[in-house]
Length: 39
Image 1 (cartoon, rainbow, N blue to C red):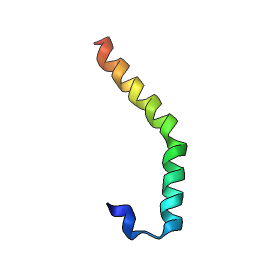
Image 2: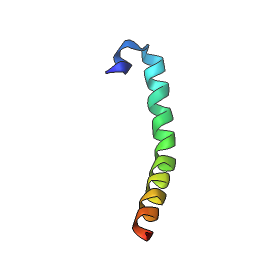
Image 3: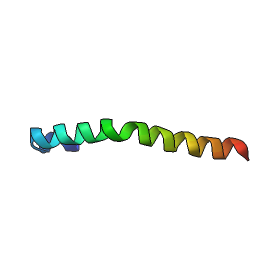
Image 4: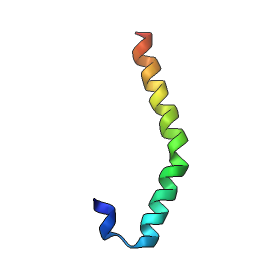
């Protein structure tokens, strides 16, 4: 994986960023799924 070559602090920051963004990503995903289902 790419992250193994990064410094640990960067990995941690990326991990926290992903956790922080997860609800937003999930919300967007559900919106896309609803669009597909509505057709």
